[in-house]
Image 1 (tube, rainbow, N blue to C red):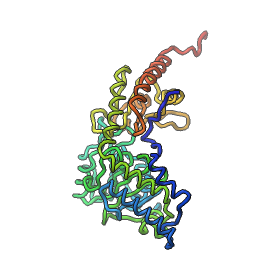
Image 2 (image 1 turned 180 degrees about the vertical axis):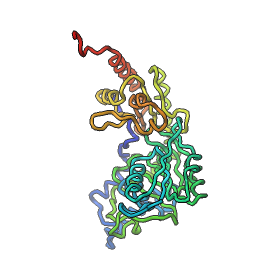
Image 3 (image 1 turned 90 degrees about the horizontal axis):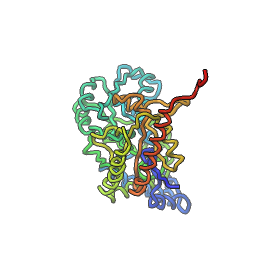
Image 4 (image 1 turned 90 degrees about the vertical axis):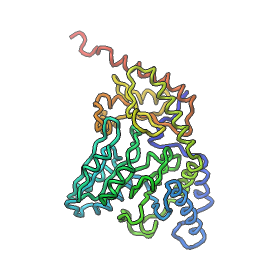
Length: 393
């Protein structure tokens, strides 16, 4: 059966080079990096080398990089830093957050704010999928403790004006959190150029392992650890370090650093080939197509059908994509991102997200397009047929 994995925004297959780097720390080598004996010090050296590799890709100092278990943990830590632990009072505090944010920021901010008596302003993107910097300028108040704007949206791939927003925040004395999880490895991510105060990245989005991420913290930015009880990560994240995963994260970043611009160019070639082929499907709508986007992401609607049903049919044929809508309690819900852009609920649930990776090929795309065209036509034909329910009554 033909087929391919086109859901790299969800997670990516482990790079064989990364796997090799991790393997020795999953058997023949071991050690707790906090231990003073040779096994512990060897593990500590491996962790610190990985920290340097991650920092180098971000244009950062290694001392500013804190390893965490996930991007969610890293984002939650920053929210907790500005609002305090759940149950503490932050009455009168204010946060400004884009509607595009991952739930680990948007949901966490709302939950913490409700518990602490703070207020959250959520800024919607325009129809182009971009949140204007002017919206942040208008929303920030003297009581604003944090602003958050992701670098690139994980659903439609639009790149946000982070540097412009960071300049506004810096002028107003408001720290800025940037979720760059989906961006790293696809576009340049330079913390100095972006001007943020906190930045989150994760290994599994760039052909590294699951279960490890990093939070970059600008020197002097407010910070309180979410996990306490140990001196690990310079007392910024208590917990025994997952050495194999951290080593894999470093190796993945080193691979991207060595590839330079060629990786992004390769991904853009794949995406453009796919989007050119969509012209054969009547009515296909690419969301955010006129905006700067990640080079590997296409979010496309096929009006007249349900994206979840299309994704299931494609999966049965061997092609892995994701739906542009979330499924919960047996019902299809419109994407909150698309609704915030002004896209109708009907168009939202008719969408797919197709995202490519370095393991994909032009041949795979050329084989996928006829299958996609056929399945869209079949679903539309089925939807257009009159129902026989109630016949004879």
